[in-house]
Amino acid sequence: MTSDTEPPKYIVWLDIDNTLYPPSMKIHDLMAERIYAYFRSLDLDAETLANRYYKDYGLALRGLIRHHQIDPLDFDRKCDGALPLDEVLKPNPDTIQLLKDFDRKKTRVWALTNAYKDHANRVLKILGLSEHVEGVVFCDYPSPDFSCKPEPLFYQQALEQAGVNDPSLCYFIDDSLKNVIAAKQLGWGSCVLYRESTPDPSNPVVSGGDPSTAGIDATITSLQELRTVWSHLFKSDSA
Image 1 (cartoon, rainbow, N blue to C red):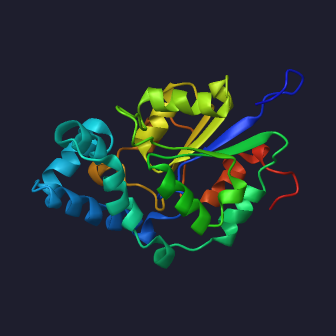
Image 2: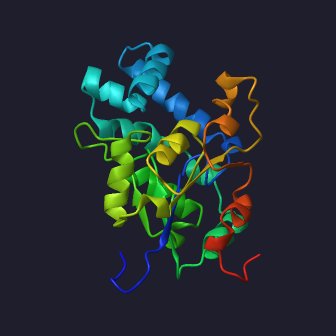
């Protein structure tokens, strides 16, 4: 929040998984293994239902809650909570320096994730980024009918939690094209897609669509490119 005499600050929203660390770390594959195992433990068709629920509800977990009345915290413990993150992830000095170089006189830095708070905070801690992120907006698994990206309600809840009145001050980066598009359609100021490699527009199933026609602001393949895309948010003497 800012006082009446202070100009409002920009707020950078960072997705966490597959954004603050690259998809090549294969955390997503480890997550999928555990999610499928959870479905199988309920005698459910893992691949078919997990993918259907993700498509229909944004998260496989929400389909499990709606149709199978599972305990979301049990799911979280056995899926995200069971990931060997300490063995796979490690701090990246370049990413840490990137967050340090945001000009905090005019910029706030928050995380925006579809994970539960335990996983989000665990990843940030392992990556050495916790102290550089002011707050985390996460999916509140225990709450009935909790929202998630790319639902407009989730973005609105993020603004309310961070005390932001002007969505044009929001600068967002995510590895999901649909999440980035959703934020842009809600009037967020700059919405950037992160892809570890340049997507192939001719293969929309693999690439998730062609970002060049999606109305977003940029597609980057390295977080360091934010220094150019959002140059005015960084300290003038940063690299």
